[in-house]
Image (cartoon, rainbow, N blue to C red; front, side, top):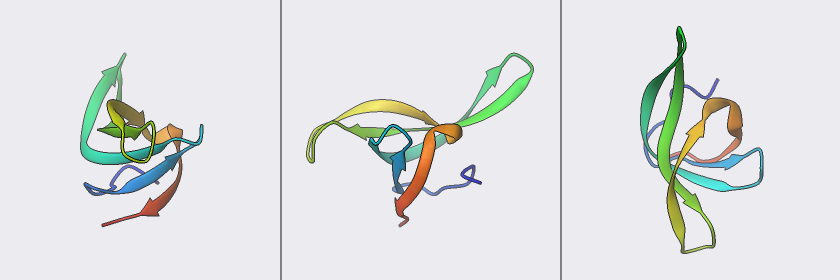
Length: 65
């Protein structure tokens, strides 16, 4: 459901965090290909840290640009 989100999409993670997608990558976990996103995880309204977000961690899309 969340495998094809575009760049600069703002999402809410299941743990309540806000995450801004910068790019999508594929990782190999054993024999399985897993999609995830690289981007910014917001700590405050203006501060963020580089992070990774897997599709199963996404709760909802806040804004898709």
